[in-house]
Amino acid sequence: MERFLQRERRRTVTVLGYFDGVHRGHRALLSAARTLCREQDAGLVVWTFDSLPGKELLTPRALRVGWLLHYGAETVILDSFERVRELSPEAFVGQILDRALGSVACVCGYNYHFGFGGRADASELERLCRRQGILCRTAGEVRGELDGSPVTICSTLIRRLVAEGRLSDAASLLGHPFASCGEVIHGRRFGRTAGMPTANQRPHPHAVLPPDGVYATFCRIDGRYYPAVTNLGCRPTFFGEGERLSETHVLGYSGDLYGKDLAVGYLARIRGERRFDSPEELVREVERNKETARDLFSAQRERLSLPDQL
Image (cartoon, rainbow, N blue to C red; front, top):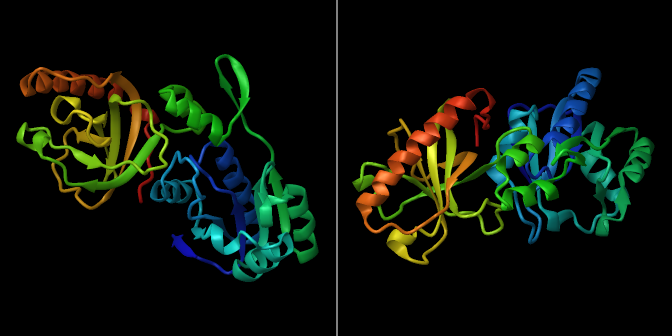
């Protein structure tokens, strides 16, 4: 069980869920929990899983924790799915919520399931918590709009929108721009020799990402936002059908990012990935892309948001 915390108190209000994307529906859970924290003089703890087997991800672990802390969690606990998967509903409430977390209250979503095989639902959680002397609140669905019609906000829908490249629609349901995250690794240094160093990242094998292409993006480094241009794909001009990477040129930044986790927020697609006849032609195109990225960054400056810690 791994803990990420700003501060920790014994009396807790525990928020339950996986929180992929930390979207507007998840933020409603956190808001309800903050109200209970004030009433109960307790700390806000998010209890979630480190990962789920084979699950596609909107937000890799570091970014998910960062968003949860950003939106008000005092402590985020990442537990092992394998460690608790066979717990009965009664054991989950007694061992995890009561004894391990000191929960005086908990909050879950209307579609929350727990216990061995996920056989217990939110109403069963309320019943078991009542017997244990723990307050339990269930938050209802949060609605958004998509293509002119109301929709229930959920991670599954947002994953589909991102995979289709519908970044504006995804951001509307998330409540913040879609972002990816990963460790900055060493590349082949073409960008640096051309005066355009890039932060290279290898996407998580289960990450949901938009289609290959060039995107106007942004980063938050040491508390400051920077416009950026990100190429997502296999770099056909130089490497043919090579490994799929994310390469981000952060405009106006000159520090060393190697080995650090870097979050990259996506604003809009600029163009598809394509092969250029020469490195010089590519450099000219990148310069045009940089101007587009600066313009989009300036136009959306007030809506930019990324966690200040990863």
